[in-house]
Amino acid sequence: MESDNHDKSIANRFTYAIILTAVTCIAEIAGGIWANSLALLSDAAHVFLDLFALLLSLGAIKLAGLPASETRTYGWHRTEVFASFINGVTIFLISIGIFYEAWGRLLKPEEVKSVPMFIIATIGLVMNLLSASALHQHSHDDLNVHSALLHVIGDAAASAGVIIGGAIMYFTNWYIVDAIISIGIGCVVFFGAWRVMRESTHILLEGVPRKMKVAEITESIRKVEGVKDIHHLNVWSICSHIVVLSAHLDVTTDFKQRQASVIHAVEHMLLDTYGIAHTTLQVECIACVAGPVLKKMKHHMQHSHTHAHHH
Image (cartoon, rainbow, N blue to C red; front, side, top):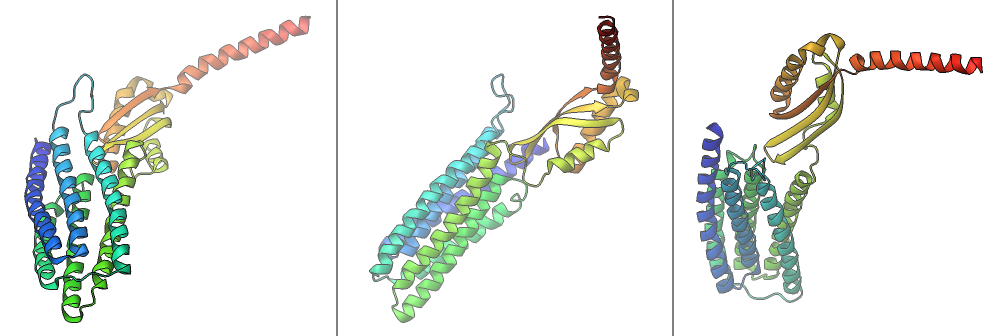
């Protein structure tokens, strides 16, 4: 129930951010064309992609709320990671387009209407700050919200750059500033996209969650009473907030009859220390099996040795 409220709260904040971002985007496209400002247009492209990101993220939240099925036992949580990945790739391509256009303007600066540029960029900055404050609360525990917040902060920084550029051009008529700011915005977009692509690819390739170390988890499990050793340990993520672990536990002989208590203790430790709620633990008692097997092997070897000696 708490999870449902959490998702609903995130969805509401996303909806609010989407409306603000859409208004900013339309204003910056119209203003960019009117003022002949590449900086405004490249910021509009940035904002448009963030709008795309927010819509994808909202869609991912709705899909993540769908129940698990016979064919998708983990539900639709992975869509969140796909949304982040697709968005990262798209933004990456746009940043290259911005660099290309800005290079043309560096070689041949064009006149820019600085007053409209300044006004539109100020409106954009206010809208971005409102969106950022709406998303900030959930950005620490959800990759999707975090990536959306990064976009909005990038937009705010870009708008601030456009405002400064507008002021400089108003007083100096130094129009090359427009191209320089566009390159700066392109860099913000480029590195933001790179980070989102790297994070989402890591999850899609089922890498160990960033802040977890397999050696550390292994050591913590070994310290649980009754656990002799651990092997076949796998840790991966379904999405940014669901971590899964599977392992084989070798228990001591005196715990053979109390396997359930060992599993229970390990699960509790994993949840409390690492926040891992989804675990699959297989218990074995190698010493219990190894004892009789070794006895049998010893007997067989002695028998073979005696047989060879007679020959």
